Image 1 (cartoon, protein in one colour):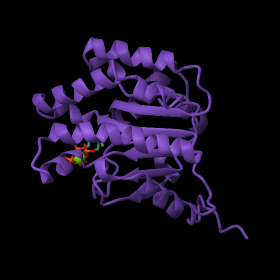
Image 2 (cartoon, helix red, strand yellow; image 1 turned 30 degrees about the vertical axis):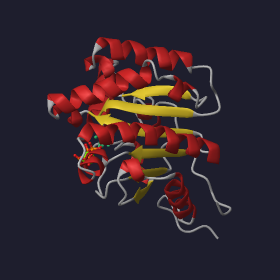
Image 3 (cartoon, helix red, strand yellow; image 1 turned 120 degrees about the vertical axis):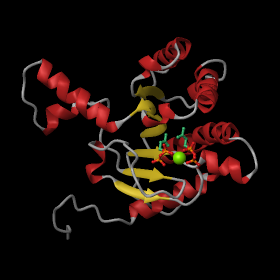
Image 4 (cartoon, helix red, strand yellow; image 1 turned 90 degrees about the horizontal axis):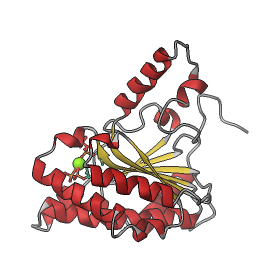
Length: 231
Ligand code: IPE
Ligand code: IPE
Ligand code: MG
C-alpha cells in the first residue's frame, strides 16, 4: 500500500450476505457464514495495517424483524463465534466490545458474549466493537432519557458520553458493501463528519485489497470539518 494517512477508527456496514449467497444458488445462511469469516479476515487486516478501532454492524435492531428461520441461523452463528469458535475472535488480540441491546438475544448468547468481552478486556492495542441489535435512533433516545433521568442538560461532549461509543473517537471512515448508499440506522450521531465509502461488492467478497483501496481513497480526501482548506 502507498504511503497513506491512516484512519484511527473504521466502521463497516457489512451488507450483501444474502444476495451473495442467492447468486450462488445457496441459502441466505450460507452468505452469513461466509460473511462472518470475511469479517474476521478483513478486521484482522485492518488491525495489521494499523487501524486502532474497528466497528462492525453485525445485526441492526430492524434486522430482528426478519423471518425466524433467518434469525435462528444468525443466532447460531453468534452462538458459535462467541462460543466454541471464540478463538477466531480472541486470536485477533484486540479488546472485543459489543454495542447494542443484547438483552433480547437468547441468554446463552448473552453469556458467551460477556465472556468474550471479559476474556479480551486486557488487550490495549486494538478495539473491535461488534454491533448486535444496534440501532442509532434507539441509542440516541436512550441517551436522552438517561440525561433526563439525571435531571441535567447536556452539551455535545457530555452527550457523547451517554452513547454506547462513550470515550471513543468518531469513525473516520465508514465502509458499506452491498451497493446500497445509506446508513440504515448506523452510528447516526457519530457519523456527522465520517468519510463514507460505498462498495458494490457484497460483503463476503470484500477483500483485504478492497479495504486497502478504501483506505487509500480515504487518505486522499480533504477533511475540512466545516472549515476552509488548510494551506
Ligand atoms: C447483511 O447482509 C447481514 C445482516 C444484515 C445480518 P444481508 O442479510 O442484509 O444481505 P442482503 O442485503 O439481503 O444481500
Ligand atoms: C444493514 O443492512 C445492517 C447490517 C449490515 C447489519 P440491512 O440489509 O439491514 O439494511 P437495509 O435494510 O438494506 O437498509
Ligand atoms: Mg442487506
